[in-house]
Length: 213
Image (cartoon, rainbow, N blue to C red; front, top):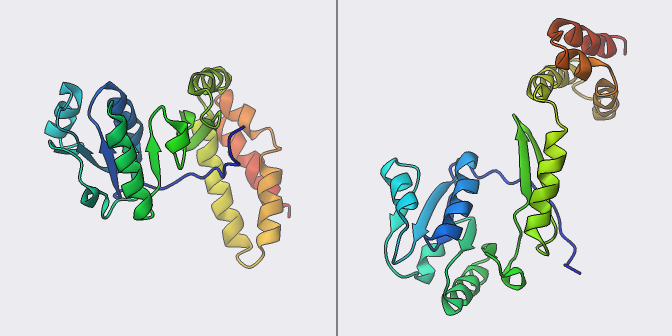
């Protein structure tokens, strides 16, 4: 059994992430990181053309050389995806010595964290993890769950964000009241009204709950 895991959603925008390795596996990790706005540094003696193209487009930086432990300075996460076990172990030791979480691809015993398989609907992020035991199963389950999520969820979430802002305005010093109201909001029929294209009706349903309190 994997160790107990604490699921978090980490903000990476503008923060430096190190990827050691620049082959096919590293490319997958880079593509996971790009939508998060991370400042990505790739270190590897050989660099795949796809990563080189991303660097040319200004999406990341490359240092084409062997890894050095000082590469970790200033980073918040490290990924190592090389085919050299000794390099992988060196990167893991170096990251841990500096207190930076590290993920060694396909080596769960060396990982401080795992990546979940995700489905995105605007700000909604559905994550499924197998705790490093079977990423393929996690990806399959994420696809199955995502297939059941309506595309209109992004609009619905935008309305809920408006409604949440209104509860904060009306009850700035009553977090318990806001919590109860926000739970009540998702029990209305607003989600299905949005799905049917009735945005104004959905907004009225939410505001009715808020202002009836």
